[in-house]
Length: 92
Image (cartoon, rainbow, N blue to C red; front, side, top):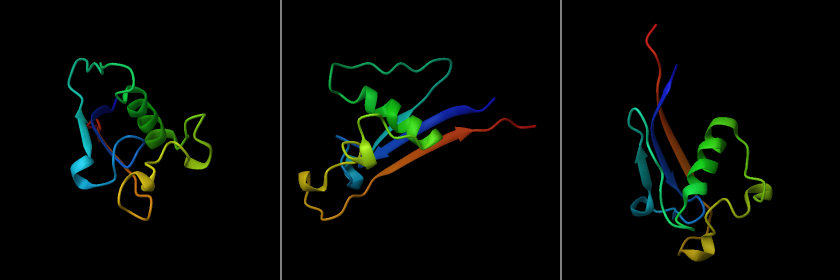
Protein backbone atom coordinates (compact mmCIF):
# COMPACT_ATOMS: atom_id res chain seq x y z
CA UNK A 1 0.00 0.00 0.00
CA UNK A 2 1.37 3.41 -0.93
CA UNK A 3 1.54 6.22 1.62
CA UNK A 4 0.97 9.93 1.12
CA UNK A 5 4.09 11.84 2.19
CA UNK A 6 3.42 15.50 1.28
CA UNK A 7 1.16 17.87 -0.64
CA UNK A 8 2.33 21.26 -1.96
CA UNK A 9 0.00 23.85 -3.49
CA UNK A 10 0.40 27.12 -5.31
CA UNK A 11 -2.09 28.98 -7.47
CA UNK A 12 -5.11 27.06 -6.18
CA UNK A 13 -7.95 29.22 -4.78
CA UNK A 14 -6.55 31.32 -1.91
CA UNK A 15 -3.03 29.90 -2.26
CA UNK A 16 -1.22 32.43 -4.45
CA UNK A 17 0.84 31.55 -7.54
CA UNK A 18 4.19 32.92 -6.36
CA UNK A 19 6.94 30.80 -4.79
CA UNK A 20 6.55 32.55 -1.41
CA UNK A 21 2.82 31.68 -1.44
CA UNK A 22 3.41 27.93 -1.85
CA UNK A 23 2.04 25.85 1.01
CA UNK A 24 3.36 22.40 1.89
CA UNK A 25 1.80 19.86 4.21
CA UNK A 26 3.74 16.81 5.35
CA UNK A 27 1.69 13.79 6.35
CA UNK A 28 2.97 11.77 9.28
CA UNK A 29 2.12 8.35 10.60
CA UNK A 30 -0.22 7.13 11.91
CA UNK A 31 -2.52 10.11 11.34
CA UNK A 32 -2.44 13.72 10.16
CA UNK A 33 -5.30 16.00 11.16
CA UNK A 34 -6.23 19.07 9.16
CA UNK A 35 -7.88 21.52 11.53
CA UNK A 36 -8.81 25.17 11.22
CA UNK A 37 -11.57 27.70 11.28
CA UNK A 38 -14.07 28.20 8.48
CA UNK A 39 -12.52 29.57 5.31
CA UNK A 40 -8.90 28.63 6.03
CA UNK A 41 -8.56 26.18 3.12
CA UNK A 42 -9.31 22.70 4.49
CA UNK A 43 -11.68 21.84 1.65
CA UNK A 44 -9.27 23.30 -0.90
CA UNK A 45 -6.60 20.86 0.28
CA UNK A 46 -8.92 17.90 -0.15
CA UNK A 47 -10.15 19.09 -3.57
CA UNK A 48 -6.55 19.59 -4.75
CA UNK A 49 -5.67 16.09 -3.57
CA UNK A 50 -8.68 14.69 -5.42
CA UNK A 51 -7.74 16.63 -8.56
CA UNK A 52 -4.12 15.39 -8.40
CA UNK A 53 -5.21 11.77 -8.06
CA UNK A 54 -8.36 11.62 -10.22
CA UNK A 55 -8.21 14.76 -12.42
CA UNK A 56 -11.68 15.65 -11.23
CA UNK A 57 -12.53 19.31 -10.67
CA UNK A 58 -14.72 20.28 -7.72
CA UNK A 59 -18.46 20.47 -8.55
CA UNK A 60 -18.62 24.27 -8.41
CA UNK A 61 -15.45 24.73 -10.49
CA UNK A 62 -16.77 24.53 -14.05
CA UNK A 63 -13.80 24.60 -16.43
CA UNK A 64 -11.42 25.52 -13.60
CA UNK A 65 -13.25 28.69 -12.56
CA UNK A 66 -13.11 29.31 -8.81
CA UNK A 67 -10.56 26.50 -8.39
CA UNK A 68 -7.52 28.20 -9.89
CA UNK A 69 -6.15 31.37 -8.34
CA UNK A 70 -7.61 34.48 -10.02
CA UNK A 71 -4.70 36.37 -11.67
CA UNK A 72 -6.49 39.70 -11.14
CA UNK A 73 -5.88 39.26 -7.38
CA UNK A 74 -2.12 39.44 -7.90
CA UNK A 75 0.14 41.32 -10.26
CA UNK A 76 0.37 38.62 -12.93
CA UNK A 77 -1.31 38.40 -16.32
CA UNK A 78 -1.69 34.64 -16.57
CA UNK A 79 -3.01 31.85 -14.41
CA UNK A 80 -0.39 29.57 -12.87
CA UNK A 81 -1.23 26.69 -10.58
CA UNK A 82 0.66 23.69 -9.32
CA UNK A 83 -0.17 20.69 -7.18
CA UNK A 84 2.75 18.52 -6.08
CA UNK A 85 2.04 15.20 -4.49
CA UNK A 86 4.72 13.03 -2.89
CA UNK A 87 3.86 9.38 -2.43
CA UNK A 88 5.92 6.59 -0.86
CA UNK A 89 5.54 3.40 -2.85
CA UNK A 90 6.00 0.00 -1.19
CA UNK A 91 9.12 -2.00 -1.92
CA UNK A 92 8.35 -5.37 -3.46
